[in-house]
Amino acid sequence: MNKKIIYILAFFLLLGGILAYNYYQKIFGKAITKDIELFVNSSDSLIDVKKKLEDFSRSPETFLWVASKKNFEKPKAGRYLVKEGMSNNDLVNMLRSGRQTPLKISFNNQDTLEKLAGRIAEQIQADSIALLETFRDREFLSKNNLTEKSVLQIFIPDTYEFYWTVSPEKFRTKMWVAYKRFWNENRLKKAQKLGLTKDQVITLASIVQKETAQNSERPTVAGLYLNRLEKNWPLQADPTIIYAIKQLKGQDYVVKRVLTVDLEINSPYNTYKNTGLPPTLISMPDVSAIDAVLNAEDHEYFYMCVNVDKLGYHAFAKSLAQHNRNAEKYHRWLNKQGVNR
Image 1 (tube, rainbow, N blue to C red):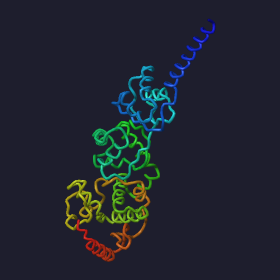
Image 2 (spheres, rainbow, N blue to C red; image 1 turned 30 degrees about the horizontal axis):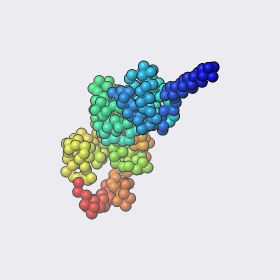
Image 3 (cartoon, helix red, strand yellow; image 1 turned 135 degrees about the vertical axis):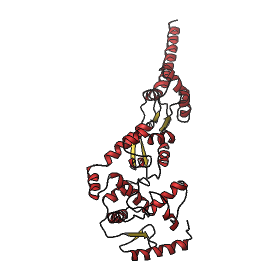
Image 4 (tube, rainbow, N blue to C red; image 1 turned 90 degrees about the vertical axis):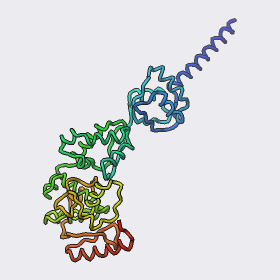
């Protein structure tokens, strides 16, 4: 009789141990099978999260069971780095607290505000329309003496850290702070020495950016344009003509060659007809282009055209006669390549 009682007690102890172990494993055991990025949208429910975990969890249903035991109903939106071996308890706590991991967001020299908004929307939760509306917010523009055309200049191409759920307003604010930080005392002094405002430096940098992709050549190009500004000569920058054409025909319009007729376009961005700098930047310059203007090369060049002997670079000239020879060589090359527009 005593033995029977002992066996029964042992059975229930064993059963209790097994149940306790299973209970413990459901809550604290290793649930996640590999490291993943888990993106939870604002509209996602626990069922949605469970579906996203199905390929990476030993038992997605157990996640829902643990969530119910902890009275957890609504996950916080975010980008979460879920580690291999993480328990359901850890996962629920992470989603409850919104303990997401920031990510690196980068953008290069985007031509337009629309392209910038699209590039950013690829990397955060906010869509491009919401971003674009925020960038164009009239109150923000007016407060900071910006326009829809000039606001592009506050976005300095770089890599920044944000949360995936950052709002368009907070994104814009951080960009504005970074822009003001970029224009430190050293850069402002260099701009002042050139007799330019920071807006004018960026406008000229945007032209330099479009004129040459060679970082090593940009200080030379910047110096040439500064020489022309000092003499009150028209800049005669083809990138500004291309910008004016695209303003008329649309950003997708392809211009491979600037024609003589294009130089008559009635636009404040036509630097063949107007002296001085255009009203705003024509594209987003990167840091190398901005610093090329601030550290422009001191030389006596006033003319340049594509160097057909070293494609990707320019042939510079001090005199119109030399420039005409370079230009004629370039036009012959264009005709030979069949580039008409």
